[in-house]
Image (cartoon, rainbow, N blue to C red; front, side):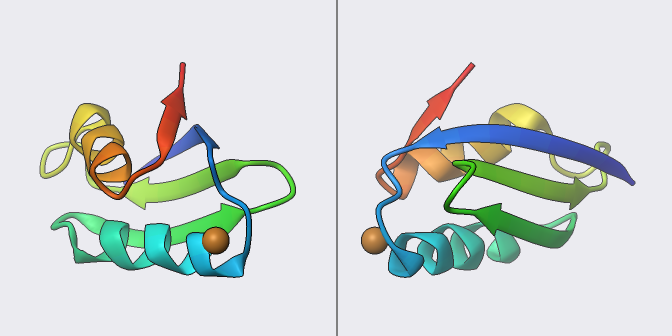
Length: 69
Ligand SMILES: [Cu+2]
């Protein structure tokens, strides 16, 4: 398991937080997702041989949020 933190722009309320959580929890290889609205941050515990950071970022973008590198 690997822990990855991703900065996300565009979250405005707890609804956004749950959308991102729902989308990420559907991906294979992800065991735990924490999203902080205050910090604009997602902390993701994932198996890097199943799901890579790029796939995670793509899923966040597809959900309508911007990933900040
Ligand atoms: Cu929202």
